[in-house]
Image (cartoon, rainbow, N blue to C red; front, side, top):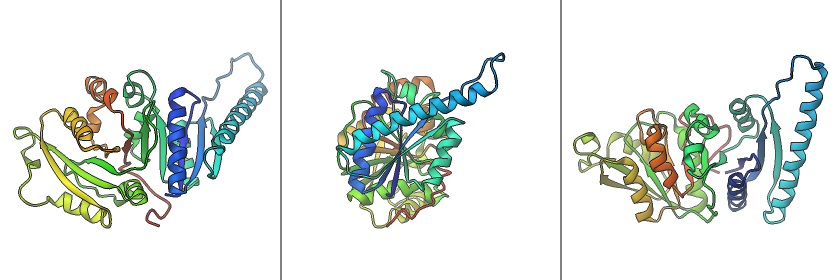
Length: 288
């Protein structure tokens, strides 16, 4: 892993995610890019047209100074290369552009609000980034403190992974920490009998095994009709340090966007949640 982007709006939850990103960058010897986006102000019709440009420039300069102050504070504890970026157009397009320009491997965002994912994974920047599926996104809830990864829980529903770049961020993290990946399949005997283990790996899991070549990993199964409960239980039971998901249109993660599922599941997730972009286009070598 070479470059990590940490998004911040200077909130308390963003502070948690930035500190996590800085510690992760230090542990993986990566560069950290502090990214802040602000909404472009809409001028009143009776104001001179020159005023908005001056106002935006001043706003950007002020926010840039805040990022530089944050950079200086981080540098005292994290001896890493840190860069600051401020943008003000469209946040998703800007973030994707910076991701490509900086040849980044991972984006880190915080969760907002008391019901954590109710705001971070539903109708927010993180939710939009997940739906677009172009960036590997690590969502960190408030209060989470970084520690080296030993166990990664990867819920997998036998949906094929046609884009091999999707798993680059997962590979990077697992290789950096020599972490074990538990490929976890939940099935319901009535609703999803096709996921019941048959004595051998499915074609999708054999392909996944190839993508995870050189990484310690194994497979587990659980009969549970409530997917949210199954994943949360297994994460706690197995002592996972991180949960990783691919947001297929029919998968558990997509169900998080149903309000009831979001409130029930996401607010309970206290581990970092890595969402792999299905349409990711990595520009760097991820297996150095």
